[in-house]
Amino acid sequence: MPSIPPHSGMSERTDPDRPLVPDRPLDPDRTFEPERLSGPDRLLGPDGGLPQARPPWTHRDGLRITRVRAVVTAPEGTPLVVVRVDTSDDGLYGLGCATFTQRYAAVAAAVDNVGPLAVGRHPADIEDITRLVHYSSYWRNGPVLNNALSGLDQALWDIAGKRAGLPVHELLGGRCRAAVEVYSHAAGPTIGETLDRAEQLIEAGYRNVRLQTGQPGLGAYGAPGTGGGYPRSPHPDGWDPERYLRSTPALFAAARGRLGDGVNLMHDVHSRLTPKQAVVLARALEPYGLSFLEDVVAPEFYDHLPAVRAASPVPVAVGEQLGSVPDAVRLVRDGGVDLLRLHTSSVGGLTPTRKLVALCELLGVRTAFHSPGDISPVGVAANLAVDISSPAFGFQESHDYNEATHEVFPGTPVVADGHLRPSEEPGWGIALDEKAAGRFPPVKFLHERWSAQVRRPDGALEAP
Image (cartoon, rainbow, N blue to C red; front, side, top):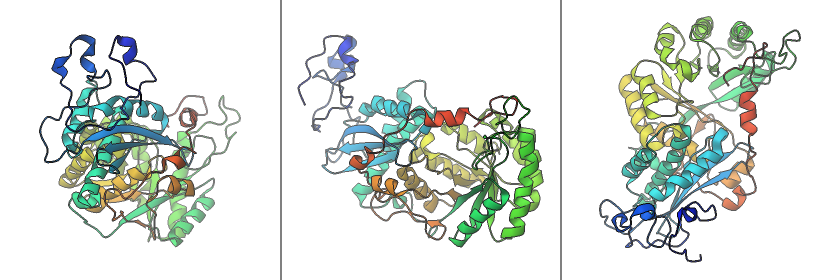
């Protein structure tokens, strides 16, 4: 790498061609003394580049973080963001999930922005490093910053496991169960086709199945809708919540008649009801013994969840759209959920998640972690580490990744007989083939279009 001339103006600091993290090996004995510089140069290192973080204390060895960067890939078409943290020990690196599909470019930019705060630090200082990054933006929280932080945090845990020669779940206290029983999704345009898929899953060993069936309108969630369902309406392809409220109980009546009582059933509302409608649906589904009803209201109505949960005879699972730890704490503390459906990568990583799960255990709330195809296999591994080691575990969503994803992420967890098992390899037990990842670039705005197309028959936007 060519030497960087001494800083001579603000334009150099904003040069888009300047690497955000130096490619040169880091000298563990070299630190940046910020008091030696003044004026605009106070943010730059002695050679005009970005400063290396000065460790606030000494360590027994010279191991240091040398580089933090984001890798974006889409082997299934869904953008996945993974953070790689390299160290001064050649070959010792960690991976973390930072996937926020709809804003993947913003997350990758945030990783580049906060990564230098960790360069020069010892990777063992996970709590201090992640708190430093969290506080560094001043205006903090939100899914972009917290996904970036999560990727860094999980990568540091991966390094911790590799340094110890242990899988991460053993660093969390070891197993509470032999394996993690998961649930999968059965969906179809009709009730009959949905139940056909459910029977296939049961045959494959699943005892937990989420059911979704399409209806007139293209906004049906988790199952294909039918266009032109409301020809006399301003928006004939719209989605009608009133019709949904009437038709969904019929799905579960048919399911119990055909599948029996030996399978646990779930359903995802996907945030599209008012608090009162959520109670109406929950009471209509009471005879069919659902294990939970998911995301019954939009995040804007979460303050109503304690009342909704109190009135619902069906357990309520909420949380995949949370963007911060304080929001999750309020749901658990104030009685808003039976199952915390956390998106681990959206709240800051494993470090805060394990604290939230401890709170769940103390207050009698269980977990049902979010884990569809828009979470990387590294994020799945983080979920499994918590699931296998926590008494608060309730359910775990699963996804069968395609062959391309297994090529990009060797070690991707695989469901067997309705269960997932964490790797026994050190760290997460997952690698990243960056050459393979480069063959699957993301498509811009693909998922933004999906989110914005949900409308009612009168043309009004609906919460996705």
